[in-house]
Length: 71
Image 1 (cartoon, one colour):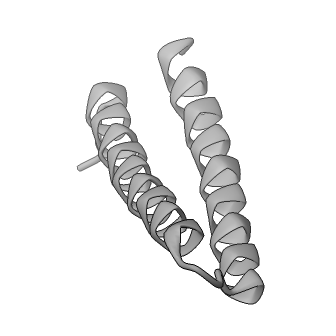
Image 2: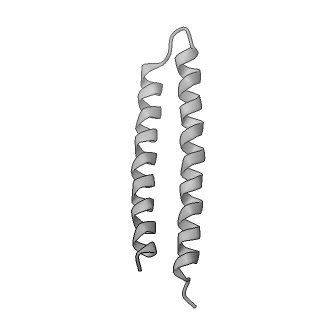
């Protein structure tokens, strides 16, 4: 049994939603870190790097979904 393109797209969309949740969680964590009297620059850099990785994953998944949509 093989998945239909619609099923594959639904799975991709689920992953995209998880990335959005995780990215937003990191954005909130970044706000919290910036609110400290002495924000930890290393922590902020790590969070920003993780957010960048989520953006890359988001773009890759959107590209894959668009390939399946055009079939």
